[in-house]
Amino acid sequence: MTDRTAIDTIKGYFYQFDFTIATLLELRKDADTIVVEGVEDVDINTATENTAVQCKYYSKTEYNHSVIAKPIRLMLEHYNAVKNGTKQRVNYKLFGYFKSGHSKLSLPIDVAFLKDNFLTYTEKGIKYFQHDILLLSDKDLDNFLSILEVDISALEYQAQLSKITRLLMKQFSCNAFEAEHFYYNNSLKIIKDIAVEGDKTKRKISKSAFLNKINFKRILFNEWFIKYKGENKLFAELRNQYFTGLNVSPFERFFIIEVPSINYLRSELKELLLIISKKWSRFTKREPSPFCSYIYLHNIPPLELLELKKELYSEGFTFVDGFDFNGSDFNPKSISKLINTSNPVKLKILNKLEYIDLTIKEISKTKEIYQFYESAEFFTTTYTNIKQVKIQFSKLIDIKKIV
View 1: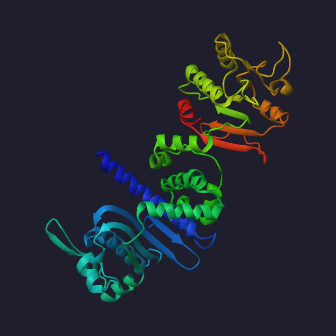
View 2 (view 1 turned 30 degrees about the vertical axis):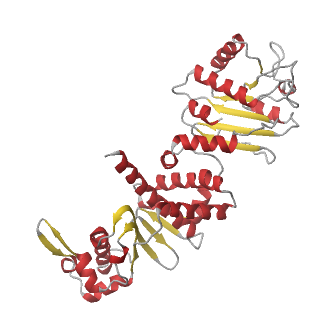
């Protein structure tokens, strides 16, 4: 598969995912449900009707009847099973985007057009008539058409995505960045996880359940969102949103970082700490309100933390950790002491998770918390008056590209 073909295929998957997300957001009642990959790509179940939707994206394809003929024949097979009492009755919708050729299809479709253009086909030189194979009369076909909707003028890919952004902004009263990076990111993960479930009952989700599952503000390192956004673009957007400014405010910033258990390199972690210190600490004479970042390294073994501190100290990197002398207890007053040119601390290192809360209570200045985690949040305390940013990462070097 060429790169171009691969991109088109991925875009097709995203179009179906996006259609599913938009469908959920537009359900009228919270109790209404959909089934992902049910009879068709999406089954919509409301209190009054069930609809099976086939959703396709043909961005480079001119519309021809043959392109949608097979999906319609498959829908007719399902209709025949319903007629014979072996399947539940549903409505059918074929929903697709085509580059051109829309004028070739005149709506509504009648029985003769259905037979000639969709139900008659040739395989290996033999002509088949699907309606004859299924023993369906013209009256049966007319009934089928009454519950079939064909729409070949669906929204273009970017237009559908913009629609989702608007729906999410309205639903969660948020801005465009939050709609895309929080709620759309979360939505992609939820729909992707549902789609791969083997049990059909596990592929069913209500509007209310969906909204509850996506309603959290943290940046997921979701493989599908990365494919949609692009890794470098995503990192750049996060950096611009949270870590870029002409004038850095003298806030007390807490960077709490999970240390990977696999592929960990001390050199990478040390480089990251130096970057955070350089960008987010100030203690020069020209700085009217000196400030220094706090660091907590989650899941780092005590001996490794000790070795890391030794290296920093031996390289002349000044830090404090809240212990005033050998054998003393942790002192939040000590670590939160204001820095200045006579106290040129470059970093404040918190050895334990519980020290974060103790230190925060000692600080009267504006505080911000930036949490970077591998798979699950590890610091969940809620502060209504503190800005908290939660970002999932795959590798330590990812954080370096963001902060």
